[in-house]
Every structure is written in structure tokens, then in C-alpha cells.
Image (tube, rainbow over all chains, first blue to last red; front, side, top):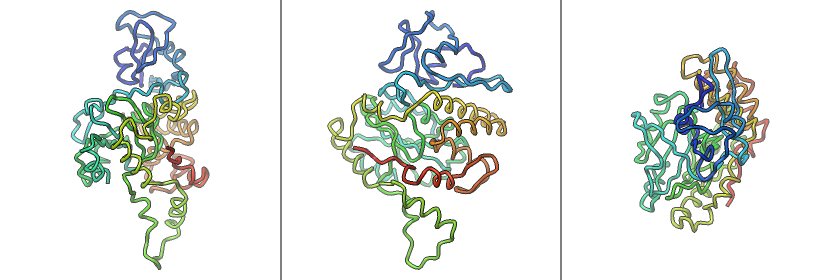
Length: 116
Length: 232
């Protein structure tokens, strides 16, 4: 996720990465990872804490005053931390958002393609 | 082609959702989508969300999600029974093929492209659901998803910074991040092909901003590994 500040809003974190901040720590699907600091509801969290706790690399672009917090790498060591499907919402050609989870109870084949 | 398969599988409770991984945006993919006239959701992923959240590193790829919202097959190559890429190999006898195209055809002929097996797997899952031998348990799904080391996660961060800067109008600033993403994750085809697409190069030729091209990349790594073999 792209950051303009090293204080991360939990709601933005959840939308961008699927990680939810709860009393037990950072949770995604059926996985929860304790965090070294306790947070109040809705409190911003230091990006360094997420980076160290979840193996999310923090990459800076000093010229533009930006950081990118990469995906977690230290929980399973795989692209998927859990088999629970992420809550993905993407637009169609007309810009209408489509939430994959709203297609249930259909089974879904999510096909990635590209023009390039 | 996915539309044809959708017509077959939708009555069995399977929805196809096609997602264009294209930082170029809606206008780049519109001609393809309008020509296909899909009845299924056809979405545009300018930020390559599927790369980061699901481990997609090449196209075409598919992820199967069951009726309970569980992934039962992680990202892997997928075709709806046929592909125009293999049609390139079928030309009438005696056809004169330009040398540059012949080189590309030679590489494609050695790739593990298996549309028939991919289709058979999908049909089996549509019919048998959780009892399909191709529907994997959660621990298998995670284990078969792409490895993600700290270095590969760092590549994802650089790729995202590049996209953000490109979409904000600073393409030159994106190139450095994309080059770093390519260095850290050399097997990620989406990172490379997406970046190359902005350099005015044709589909396979070299460009001035990056070290490789589709063709040199395939030749260096071996066409046989371009798509991993589909496992049961």
C-alpha cells in the first residue's frame, strides 16, 4: 500500500492489504499475529511495527515523499497467508465497483489476463 | 473464449470473472472487452491487486474460489479449452514465416500450454465441487501459492511505487522502481511485461528503458518454465 505518512490508518490498511487490527493483533482470514504494541480502536499504527511484525517491506521514495508497504512475507512465506479469499473490489468498464464476494453462492473462477 | 465457457458452466453454479491487469487503464482494455461481449463480470485492475493479494505473476492465470469464499486453487495458468497463442503454430503447409516470427513460434511451441487439461479440470470442479480431485484443502492452497520471500515482497513494494508514480503522470520516476522490481523478482512476468508495454516496443522486441524483452527473457529462462505444469 502507498503511504504519505508512516502512521497507517487501520481502515485503509484493511482495504489495501486485508489485515484487520484487532485486540489480539493483526488478523487476516483465520490468521492473527500479535503486535508488540496495544492499540486503541481506530488508532493509527506505525508502519515500522507492521513491517517488522508481518514481514512487510517498507520501501521509501524520498524524492516524492512516499513509501510503499509491501505484502507480508514472514507468516507462511507464500503469496497466500490464508485460503480465505481476499475481499477484492474492482471496477468494470463503466467504473462500477464489483465485489467478488457478492457473487456467492456461485463458485468463482477469477481469470487474470492483460492487453500487453 | 471465456464467454463460451461461462455459458456452459454458469448453469452449474460457476461464474467466470475476467480481470484485466492493466496499469494503462480502461481505455487500453476496452477494445478487447467490447469485442468479447462478456455476460460475466469483466473487471479492470490498474493497480495489479491480483498480483499482490493472490500471487499472480503471469497471464493467463486463474484462481478458483468456492461458494463459501475459500480459495480451492491458487493462481496458476488457465485456458478455456483453447488459446489463440497456439493458433499461431497452425499455418498451412508452405506458408512463408518471417524469421522474427519463426523465433517466437519456436519458443511458444516449447511452452507448457495445456488448454484441454485446464478445461477438463474446470469442468470437473463445476460438476463435483468440493469432491473434485482438483479442489485443494486450505493448507495445500497456501503451500502451492507462489513463494514470497522478503526480497519478493520488496519487489512488490517497488512495483506498486512505480504504478503509483506512473498513474500520477511521472512515468520517468516509475522506471527506476520497475527496474528494481524486475531485479528482485526476475520470474514475475506481469511486472516485466506491464513495464515494457509503456516503452513503445512491440510485443517481443527490446526497449530502451529495461534490460530485457519478452523474447530474451523467455530464451534466458527457458520456454518450458514460462508456465508451470498444471498439477492435479
